[in-house]
View: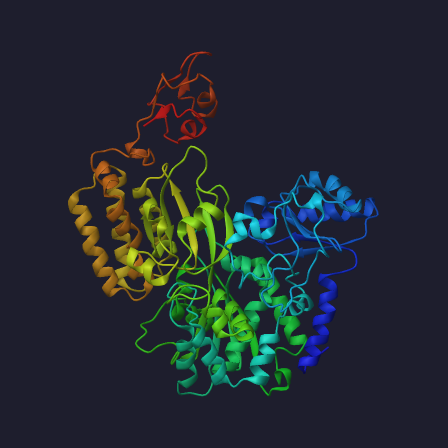
Length: 634
């Protein structure tokens, strides 16, 4: 079926609605990478087997991630006339009992996480109600979606369909209001009106720079030249994050729709999506989305009878971190080595193949359909004075509940960390947190009162980056943290310009001096001077921001660098400075350290504190990890 009119789109929407709300029970299993890593694929097969064995009529659907990565595998169930209920974790061993409860018309209260009486979609004028009338008393003991701390302060725009629709079904995307914004843009608005709406919304680039999306589109549309391009950056390479991956795996059509609208607004007939080779599942689902959109006439010629022609091509990259930089990415698209070039002329004016080109990242494009569909005023009503809308955040590191969330701009970091990330594990204290990836800053725990705001974060010495939030507890050494990120950047530098190629190498050497106990005040001065030179002379932001982590580690944790000057690593991380000992007063003689030591450096008789032979010790830290009473000291 080719969609040529708004009426065609509405008919397909009704068909998709039947898939989302069938007469039988709908069982939705999260199948993003995080879900599959925890065994979701095996759980789906187990549910299929058990449903057949119990002759239970149901529809089993693979969906995306609902953000509760620590509760995977997660399963959501819609039983006609009852609340939608999320369960987790549901293992293969749990499936027989789980299906038995559903087949009897009940719920598996043991694994229930929360219930919702209506869908989460922001597009629906009147959200579909799952529960008809009052919720049964026996279900009220299951927390409501709106009362769960994890979701209470979230506002889902980019992730509005994640966990609800089958990411490989265009019908289900359309049923949730998908492609209605595209239809509105190409049939009811001029390109200038679309750009005006995006500009008015104050949407800023979600890749880290925070530049006005509308201004970039305006510059690109007005640039001289015939052919122009719109580009999507899916080259998220920061350690410990996966927001772009999850978004593509959960709802690829929302990114594609945003890109098509952008092409119409800018006057481009061709779009490119540059995706890292490390996203095989996201790539597969994105390719499927493009095929489906083309089959329905939403890509190709005369889209929705508007006369607008647009096609999309995927380019798979090798995963180099530097290819997240705009000019390096464009070089890769052109078939050249992914190296940056000076941007004396903006890429919006002279970019891909020297033509006007607009590059935005996955999350920026995913916001566009909502802005066009619900209006700039609605979008700009969320967030702070200068930072509008929401931000997808990946929370990892030393937290109880690693997860993926979407919160309004202006949300306090302590709310993100404590209410969604669950705080630090027991017996641990938060020392610091890191945002903005390797090019961001590391801030002390006392600064958790910081707002999720471009300007406020900039003043504090960090940036938003792609949206990774890494919690660092009191076991970490801040010198080692600086070393880790600098080592990463050394490996990822393209080496084209001397300030970055040699600067990062020298920066790492200076940091390593502290890890082996020979660092001095002079070395701290050299780091400061080197950072200044790199910021001023490096070709791209990788080199300009490479010193950020170590600079702010020194600013906020100089006492740790000073301790290393004295030959001590307070956290007991830097091996060359470690001297382990066993505190007999704290030791319970449990023998855990003896069993954990891989080189038999610890010995002792049952019932008495063991002894440690430092001549044999390889300083691996295995003994310290297993000691529950912290009797292993450094």
